[in-house]
Every structure is written in structure tokens, then in C-alpha cells.
Image (cartoon, rainbow, N blue to C red; front, side):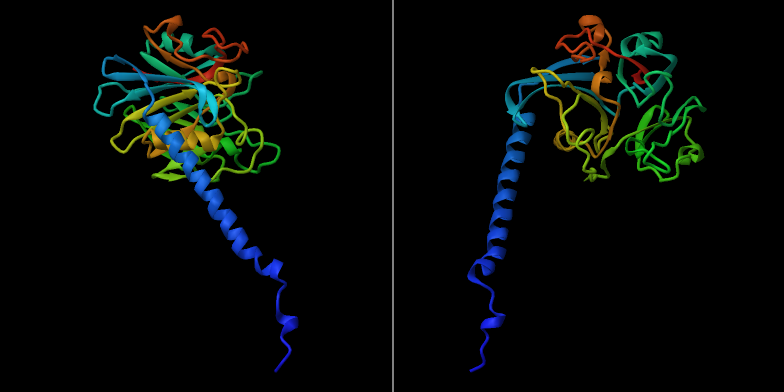
Length: 299
């Protein structure tokens, strides 16, 4: 008989593939289990509700590390598609707090908008308001055309938001026919599909305060914030943000500026209308609102 010993793998090597498969299946099982647990925790949580002229404000504070194994304060403003309310953009040449800028425009609600230069105050993503281009996509040191947070665009059609997947051309937005355009990013969910995130340890994989806008299949718009950088609320990675918005029913979702900028304002609410706990003062209170360049308003 031929000697086949040279073609045989050691038993330890023969066991590697089944072992890897078993470990992979075990990891997927554990991950799926955690996801199912977190999704149920979110959906079945005792949310607080407050209704203002057909718009619903929902808040929840997870205080026992039960959501993503962490404490989280989440606020969501739901704007049904059949309400008469419309979205708009507002901007100031000098950085202004979200609540103050919203008040100037007689908005009933507002969320901080896209990214900006802290020193120069100008938007660093494309921003068009009433057909006037105010900001342009500024390329980064490591990019030819767009930064990572410029790969999603929010346009308004008669005040109704639509989220678009951008072209790689840095000036692509200038060709769009809409009167109101705000570029931000990254794009989180598009046409019901979770969008892949790059492996970025700081911006993507680290937990931060996050602001986002989402749209459900029935045209309900969600203005979403989660606080961060405190013991009371850890904030989310972008993957955690994607999961949360998907579990809240979003078909499309776009990340907005976050961190200390994260602010949700609702007229008539306590604390000057500041619903969440902005962290620019490094405290878990309502006084740490950061001045920003632009906001999304509800009228």
C-alpha cells in the first residue's frame, strides 16, 4: 500500500477547522443573544411620553447598566408624517446654542445639526438654506474628496426629510435641485440596510454622545439623542447607534454632530426646553449646552 503519512495532517491541525467553526458559532450565538436582550430592553422599557401638538417626546434612562451593559439616557422626538409640522435648517455666523437659535426661528423643537469649525464657526459640511449655499465639504488631511462624516445627506422636500447616499465628488451637493441640504455622516441605515462602519477606534468604536435623524417606512421622523461621557450615561458606538435606530423602526438614518454638541430642544419643556443632558460642562445636568453652527428645526 502507498505510504500516505506525508499527506496526513496532525490530529491537532485536523481539529482546527471544526474548533474554529464551533467557536464562531458560539460567538454568533452569544452576540445574537445579547442583541435580542438589548432590543427587548429598549422596546419594552418604561418610556416617558409627552405629546405636543401631535409630536411625541419619549425619554428613557437606563440606570442599572441594562442596555449594552451600560447606563444610557435616550430622548426621541417622533414627528408623524401626517402632521402639519415641517422641518427646516437654521444657521448663525457666530456659534449659538441650539435652544437660542431655535427660539429665534420660533421653532417648537430642534436638534443640533452637522459638523463645524469650533474656532471659525463655519460649517465644514455642505449646508444650503433657502437655496443659499452656506457651507461646503472641507476635505481632510487624509482624504481627497470627502471626510468620513460627509457621506450622507439630508434634503428637505417641502419640509419633509429625505436621506440620500452621497456621491464621492466633494461638490456633488451643488448639483442637487433642493432648496435645503445638510450633509453629515456617516450614513447609518439606508433603504433598510445597516451601513458598514470603518474600524476607527476614536470616532466609530468609542462611546460618545450621539445625535441622529431617522425616518420610518410610514414617514415618521425621529430626532434622536443619547447622552454620554458621564457615569449616568455612557453614550454609544456607531454600531450601537445603528442597532438602536433599527430597533426603533428606522428605514433610513443619518448620524449628526455629536459629543458636546448633542442637544434636543422642545419648546415648553423644563430647563429652558433642553430635554437631554448636554455634556459640554462635563456634568450630568441640563446646563452644558454647547454653541453650534447649525441646527435642524421643527415648525
